[in-house]
Image (cartoon, rainbow, N blue to C red):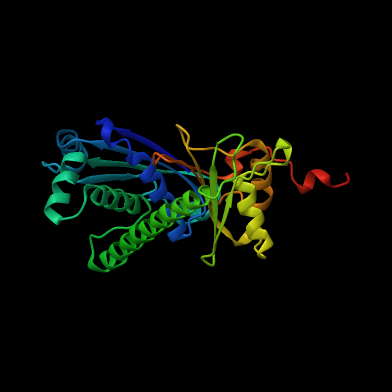
Length: 288
C-alpha cells in the first residue's frame, strides 16, 4: 500500500496519515487484496478549476476530481483481488472547496476532507453515482467506511489511555523511566503491563512483555490480539527495545497495529513486521 501525498499548504500535511488509515480501512471494508498505489494532492480552487477545464471541459472549481487508471480495464476486478501492486490513479481535492463546504454543512473541516478522499478513492475503484442505482450503492458504502474509520480511531485513542493508566503502575525506582502498555483482544478485553525493575537489572521486565504475558496467562493466543499500545514520557513516540521486539514478533500478529505514543499526544503507528523485519522465529529452530 502506497500513498503519494502532496499539499500546497503545510498545515494540511496532517492528512497524509489520515488518508493512509482511510485507504487501509477501505481495503478492509471492500476485502481488496492488492497493494494499491494512490496519488492524492491537496490544491486550491484555481488549480482544480484549471484541471476541470482542461480534462473535463467544466469551467468551474469542484471539491474533488479523480483520474482512475483502471477505467476501461476489463481485468479490474481480478487485479483488485490479486496480491500484486496496482496503480489506482490520482485524486485532487480543493482545500478552498472543502473548507467552505464544511461550514456550509455544519460539520468539521476534518470530516469534509475525510469524506472527499473516500469519495475520490471509490471512484478510483470503479464506483460511480451518475445513475440512481449506482448512487444507492456508492453513498452508503462511503458512509460505512467513514463510520468504521471513526470507530477504529476511537478504539486507538481508548487503548492509548489504557496504556497511560498502566504506566502509573510502573515500578521503576532505578531508571525513573515509566512505561505503560495495553493489548486489545478481538473480544474487547484489554490486558495491561508496566515495566517492573529489579536491583539486579537483568531481571527487570518491560511493559510490552508484561502486557503480552498477562494476556497469554489469561488464555489468549496470537490470533486473539487486535491492537497494541505503549506510552512513555519521551520527546518522540516511545519505541520497544530489541528484546520486546523479538517477543512481539512471536506472540503478536505481524500486521496488526502497534501504537507507539508519548505523553505529549504524539503517536506513530507501526506493526511487528516493520519493527523487526528479520525476526528469529520457530522456523530457525527446525532441523535442516
